[in-house]
Length: 383
Ligand SMILES: Cc1cc2nc3c(=O)[nH]c(=O)nc-3n(C[C@H](O)[C@H](O)[C@H](O)COP(=O)(O)OP(=O)(O)OC[C@H]3O[C@@H](n4cnc5c(N)ncnc54)[C@H](O)[C@@H]3O)c2cc1C
Picture (tube, rainbow, N blue to C red):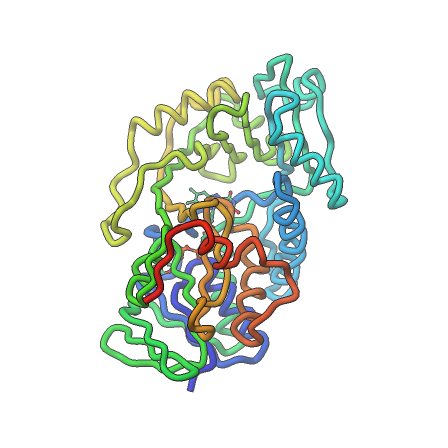
């Protein structure tokens, strides 16, 4: 019998397969599409890794995750993280920035608070108002998303994990202390199952009789060629997160890594009611909105749109991750770390989920990610 069957080959399933296989466990990962497909949350060229969070536990987890990425790089003999620096911008005194600065200081992260005149001198491509301040983390950077997923998969295979693509899991049935999994006409038995299904999680939870308020949105990114190519490159432009005066969702801009400057308005997309509907083409009106916002932060940067793509966020009602064992069936582990900022934590979450699958507990503090905190406040039905 398999020890662990993982549903989902996005970054979380792939990282979990790697963590388990590296520990010598018999693991099978089933992915319904291909690795790196564009109907989930883990594809593309870039994800931000930074430590600035208004909640200290995320800052601390991001520090541990940074180490876990280095361990993966050493194990795979590949460089993944591109150090670019990360710059949060906003109105001086914005509660979000104040909380981030306090947590960065408390966690011992290297960062600077940068005044408006200094920002203008160091980053002349940015449009900086007099009341703006910056939080600059020199160790912030970019993870090449699709390449990271491929690396987890390659390394998991190297340690003996079986990875099957084009296999959709239809049903998960608790079976004594283990589970039975029906997928594409075959039946698998495993001691544990990990649901790392991203935006498809509500469908699988429904098949298990769990009704749970997870929402999925479709987000859009757009890449532009700026007038000045030099000032858009790594070394000149960090990842910029512009919170402005805090009334609008932040704009996130990535330096040009070969496809222009990528920008997105964080978390503004429409609801996705059925994850199996093919994603529509990127919305030209949203490209316009991104371009307008980008021009405010980086004038001259939204000169020519080169490409746009969509991607999904999965949201819990309180915005925190859901990483826990199923409340009734402890052999089922659910990992939904999305809400648009989960990628940076993937190697650590892989370890945490492996701990939960093998030992039922982990040394990391996952209290904010447990089922129970949601069950107390939101409608959760268990069959
Ligand atoms: C536009 C965008 C920008 C982002 N930016 C950042 C960022 O800058 N920094 C950051 O840290 N995070 C960022 N994120 C968030 C991060 O990318 C996600 O947290 C992460 O990719 C989620 O991975 P996942 O494995 O949980 O989900 P997914 O990548 O969606 O993977 C789930 C997989 O499960 C498979 N699956 C589902 N159901 C089944 C089934 N029944 N049978 C078989 N397979 C199944 C799916 O096909 C899919 O491949 C961003 C996300 C988006 C969309």
